[in-house]
Amino acid sequence: MDLDGGAGNNKRVFNRLGTDTSKNQKVCFHWRAGKCTRFPCSFLHSEPSHPSGSAAASSTANGSGAPKRFADDSGFSGSAQRRGPNFKNNHNNSWGRMGANNKVVRKTEKVCNYWVQGNCTFGDKCRFLHSWSLGEGFSMLNHLDGHQKLLSGIVLPAGMDKLFTGSKDETLRAWDANSGQCTGVINLGGEVGCMISEGLWLFVGIPNAVKAWNTQTNQEFSLSGPAGQVYAMIVGNSLLFAGTQEGILAWKFNAVTNSFEPAASLKGHTLPVVSLMVGANRLYSGSMDHSIKVWSLETLQCLQTLTEHTNVVMSLLCWDQFLLSCSLDQTIKVWVATENGNLEVTYTHNEEHGLLNLRGMHDLESKPVLLCACNDNYVRLYDLPSFSERGKIFAKQEIRAIEVGPSGLFFTGDGTGFKVWKWAEPVATT
Image (cartoon, rainbow, N blue to C red; front, top):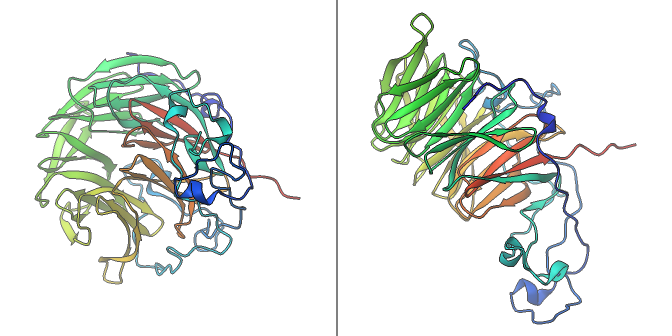
């Protein structure tokens, strides 16, 4: 498969399918209780949209007018420092505080199974949702399918007009970002555990190996060393880190020999490492042993172990001066560095279901948004730092993969395929 993708205009990615409409009627009390037998009913069998208001989340850092950044906002280079917890000006007391005008999305909606199958006869009068999302400000552009099993990775390398997906069906697929057509399939011989891209490189984690492709030269490498599945990868300080069943492995690319060479093995977790993040010259690792470890990127020594979670730490994210972690214990924890450099929890957000994945992005008004995938097949969208809900995305199966693209685009896995979403342009005011 040709992995060489020329620079394309990612603003042209796929075609818009349409937007949702909303109603402003009184909601049927009996429908909310699941007992309405009237058809047609004179009351609304769906929740009304709420009036938009001012966002509680500040979109600027230190009053400078620049959006607060996620760790993924900057490109990778050997000397670049990604944002992360820092004890300077870190006492943000806005976490979890929703303004009076913030929209709150009701949690009673369910996607109509008959609508999914294309044969619901109730139309607008159906008591269930006829949409894959709920909320304003974003819409679905396309839904692409092709894998035989659950999607486990989505990657849109910067500067390319190709998108890559990996699956439990042991394949890697390439998609043309302009037409939405699948342009190639690679059989990997093992289930894809994770995928990332850094610069010209595409990395795919499979059992007992990491596959690496140079998307410019089409060179392919197989990095040996992992025992069992590779669950997570991240690049920091010119090293590629992989979370495996036996800890963390690191490789460094040698330009002289044109190969990846083993650089380090980080031991300390007692169970597999399933999440990694880099920020503020630190490597953060989350594990099935319920802990988060903080490592120095310079010495690769463990600096601190965080044990506040009570179940698997599934995902980690750096935003501005904070570390966010999510777990199957149904919580998102926000960590901040104290004056002695150690991390402590400054806010805990509770969900009703276990959390699988966190991704951060900015909408087209430069407001920071947190995407949270839960094991109830929903992705919840929250403003930061208020955690006021912006909307929900529904799926047929657990969403293990979320990718953020340019110009307000983002992608969510959905069983054997994925959906393409886009934030709406801000409405001009006079």
